[in-house]
Length: 346
Image 1 (cartoon, rainbow, N blue to C red):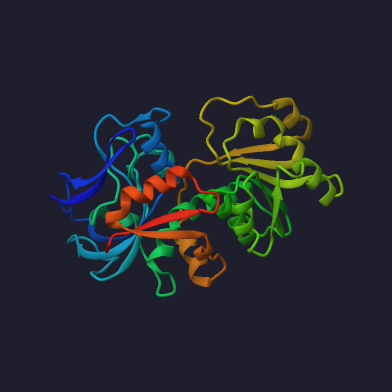
Image 2 (image 1 turned 45 degrees about the horizontal axis):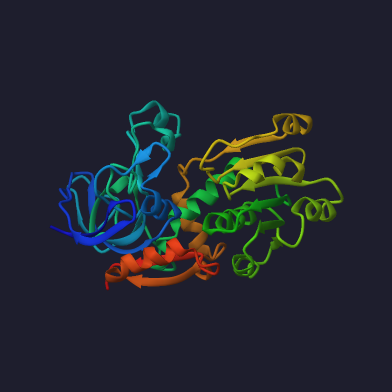
């Protein structure tokens, strides 16, 4: 049996052997996992044992942000070969579903997603995955960067939903990994500048190294006042809510111009109050994001071209035997940590 990082129950993580189905179908590839990123959802399952309706009832392998090397291909696979360096899209839909036929496969009710109960994740030396959701990495993209494609895909989904026009001004609330990647995606999508708002000075300092990102420390300055001053009182063209903080939803429309857009990316733990009249008075368009669809190839192209550089966001890499230690550090949420990763070769 393979060894894996197993969440036994809330606050109980162990490296141990576990029986996993690694049978290879004709349209699958077998992948030796190289690098896995620790996502906030992984940490949330670790600390709380659930996210909304998804409850950890049985031991579950964690991890869904991954890169690796193809070591075997199913007999019907022609798009990939043994030795290919790849990253894997962790959500697999029923491609015959109505959602998939509409191009909205991320919304397929039957979609299975790594490390979402009861589906095991990829923090194990080897996985089997559909070739259709496995993407070859170009030489310019490292394995560590390949494991960042998954969170970057969320950023690209958000930028796509925003319908950015060249020269737009954006605001991003929340400077975690997703917030920063949303900001970078907005710049890649045509925004001239992105104001990134947060309370954590250390994360804002990391983000400020990117040209076009303007940090706003909400402890020191009122974001609404900053945006009003910088836009001549007009407001931002688009606001991306990436914090999930209830307080933000009460005032976010004040930062947006008439006819602008709000894109909800962060997921509040509980229902939040929203001033619909404030949005109506400006005819603000409200969009929502749930994971992503049809953007993985674009994310890889942006990394290959250098248009988006995720390397500064990788705070530290742990070897596989240090997986529990890595999660304990992620749970502590050190201010300067953006993305922690686990290398499976250690």
